[in-house]
Image 1 (cartoon, rainbow, N blue to C red):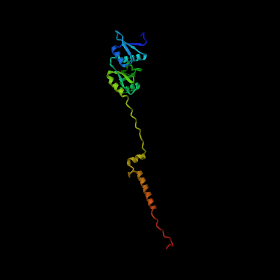
Image 2: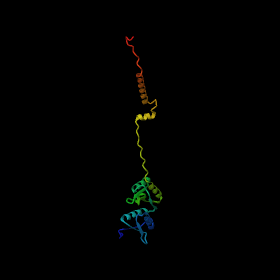
Image 3: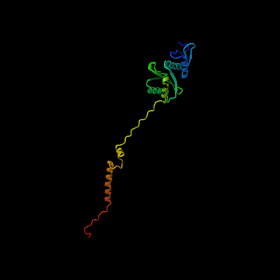
Image 4: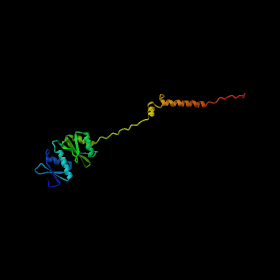
Length: 199
């Protein structure tokens, strides 16, 4: 147990203490130094800082090489985690608060640092992870609303208002013709009728 409550120690198993210290510095998550004469890291800082550094070490202390990325992303951490999971289902993605388990496969951690997304990903996946985070989620295309046209309008539109074969137009024209005939008859001058005894 450490006598200093603000100090944590870590013994890397797969990487050197020097490489681990370099990646901690690159991440800006906290501060670490190497114990003289040993492959041991001494981590200083607040409880949250030390926890984040230990989470980082748990990921990068692996036989698989990891890379640290800083990405300008249009999304926050939660949305970025979802985007990465949806884009690459074979990745196990988490955050500093909820990191992926060791036995969960290809692990990636995301965190928000200074308005950017901080990512720790396997070197072989670094470019793909960076591209997915920079792009963000694909915009959802709005569904076009269907416009329902009345049946009569559809028929006029399909046949044309001047089409003689159109039934409504034909009926209207017939009625207009009868009306014109009646009007013409009313305009004819009456024939004088001879009255009896007018001779």
